[in-house]
Amino acid sequence: MADSAHPEPRLRVLLAEDQFLTREGTRLLLEERDDVEVVGTADDFESVIAEARRLEPDVVVMDVKMPPTYTMEGIEAAHRIRAERPRTGILVLTQHDDEAYVWALLGRGVAGLGYLHKVRVGDLDQLVRALHEVAAGGSVLDPRIVEQLLAHRSRKPGSAIGTLTPAERDTLRLMAEGRSNPAIADALSVSLGAVEKRIAAILSKLGLAEERDLNRRVAAVLIYLREAAGSTATGRPPESAV
Image (cartoon, rainbow, N blue to C red; front, side, top):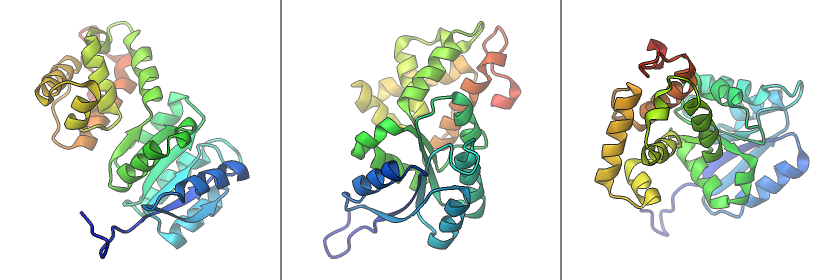
């Protein structure tokens, strides 16, 4: 823990958003925090790539759709930046709930990546926690998105998610958000042992092997959710999901 003589360095954030009011509003909110420094802003694909190279931020925050075409520039920029600087965290902050965008961002891996709905800007603590998480190489997925994915997949014939108990579904949702076992226990007000038993049951039912690394575990769950529609009647995921 840092003392007053040796404070922790502030998280250096590059903010990319083409809407001026949204960009400036988010910047002002983040600058209220002592642990965050907005080192620059960008408003389109080319400028966020250039500024990420010039400023070398800890985290880049951006929308899915930006100029010039307003399609998937944010996600394309995320992969470009990560390819050049793998330690740079990316937090996509968007109003788009379409799961296709989630898979476009996370389909190659989840480490250092986050996807949150813009309504989360109103909860500054949650937003800043997400920034720190992706900067540290973790992953964050909006609870609202996770709920949609779980609900959609559980209705698929033969989906193993449909065999999970309500308690296991709650645990899986928090796993997919990137929560640690102690954090899940705290959120659900249960013991750590109970969480560990639920996770073992979930991974068994989904046909997934336990992973020690949190990001790999989250990736396995997310990949399973994406591929569950192709699962067999036995509930085992296809080989590409393991």
